Length: 372
Image 1 (cartoon, rainbow, N blue to C red):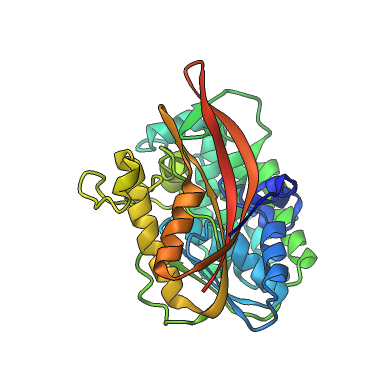
Image 2: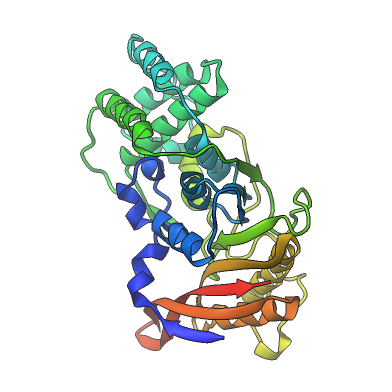
């Protein structure tokens, strides 16, 4: 395995470059990587039109949307119904004129004040009273749109506008609240819809397939053996963040009673009941569960990847109060045991980790490049 320091790629494994890109910027997903990273991997792997790429932790669909821009076929899987919805909405082919007609209809409606009784207290805390009333008013009309793709487009637009008008800030594992001035919501929402419709003409999506599934990366039973040419993905990092909690406002407002098991740095197992597959490392319970889950997920990736197929996985070290766990090296070892050849490991970011005032080390963010 060739180990390189590639700090020039540090920003590419973040979502930040997507903020300037049409359609990719429809939903800010701090945990994701960039279109530029996906495109770089397609080039490195020599992928061409008609090839198939899998992202088993697809988040908000960056791998899949980039694949459509390249003419690659893709499948994305995510345990989160919210992220699967966002991915699907970004990947559909829309008729801009139909969207403009629907927009005129939505914004011509006279305001009717909705009843705020029964609204989740967390949601009430996240918005001013007037902003929340506007969001619920528009949501009621959007829910009545008959065509699913148009309804999904405006739901995502409303989610986008609501997030940008919220007092809530996603800060690692928690939501923090800061009251601040926000623009009049109706005007702001209308502008976001207008921008999103305009951006449809700024991307060139090829006629390739893009399939999104709500599912578990450990159980890809619906995918055939050796059916993919490449896998590009970033699993949850080894940490204590519960990824569903920081998106609880979006869930409550737009997915109603939908509930899923908490997605932490492991994928859902009871940490007290999991088999320790790395006993020689004396890992904390959370890390035992993480590597157990990732071992199973890597096995599924190996099964569905064609012979000679290539993989890029973005991972990061786990920070605990007494140590740094080198996730990249441990995952590389598990992958080798499964049958992958880990060809390269790029260190793309480092951050100093402390416990109290004591430095305990540096946590690496890495890209593992593997081949079956």
